[in-house]
Image (tube, rainbow, N blue to C red):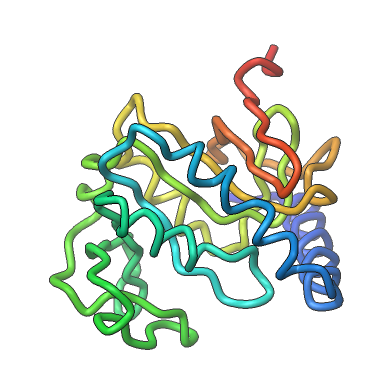
Length: 195
């Protein structure tokens, strides 16, 4: 159970980040600068879990297309009608449909939460992250529930803007830190910064 103080701190942080993202006029440039770093991070991984971004999130659509072009199997969340995590394999833009809150999701067969264990690399969404890998998610706890099913040695990564790497974020005991952070200008490995 979240404390009211932590809940309020997370809500305020989320509102601030979302407002800043909506006002950002450099998003397309930042996305283009970040894409080569995202692809480098995934190098050597045959199965990658990702999410389809929607504005004003940092873009993942070009990453997913590039991974597929290079023969990487990409697993995407299926949110519509699922309280528990569910997934489906990406099969191109033509095999997507609007899902929960209009977020695109695959029309390929839906798989259960355990499908995540087949991926050696997992991209998770974040609004802010610390150099130690503490992540402020978008709320709802979907990835908190999903990551329980990740392979123990899977790389958990997130992509944010440079200004969204901050000294501190409110966290709860169940919040899993990320192993890799990619911004338009740098790639950070929080494991080296954890005490």
